[in-house]
Image (cartoon, rainbow, N blue to C red; front, side, top):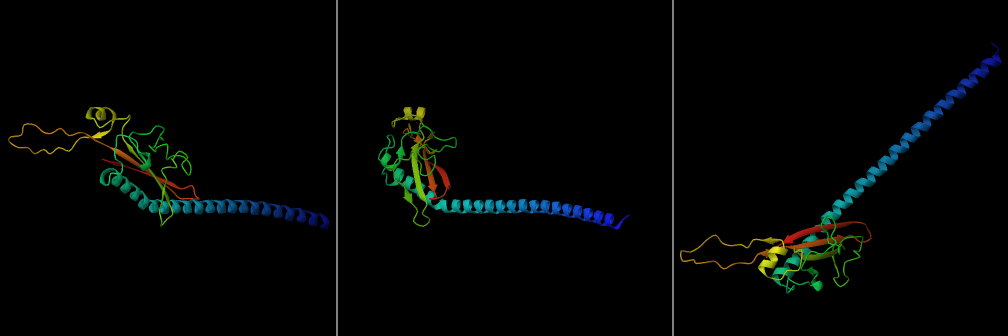
Length: 206
């Protein structure tokens, strides 16, 4: 074998080895790139979960305040003078409103930020500490308008039996009939401005 042929074959062999090394290096770079992308997505997901948990914790206090205000408006100060008619000024409806979502959120509170159906006359509260925006609606759990008559309420509303004491007296001739007590549903929406983060909460009052 001539010396030139040996050199030529060695050069071809070295070139092939370099091609294999380059191919392996490219595969390794692709694998490392995919691993880096996966790590970045994992970090982003973790940050999103932590942010959502923090927002959930921050929204608990505003939700509780909104529910307490509903209790005050209905049962204590009674700024909602009559529960058998709508009182939009105090975000109150005497019946369940049509168009609620599959999760039970009223249409006026559903949708993107800010809720397009939420009446501007309702206004909204802003938590002074967190700057979270709080919107709420109170609904009497009735499928149709029902005056304060026992018969109509039984047919149209979700009711709780009246609380009657089991005690009695020897000379008792009859007890005073008590009307059933309707349920009220309070739905609260808490928004974090400039983000797509929203919390919904509901409570039933009676």
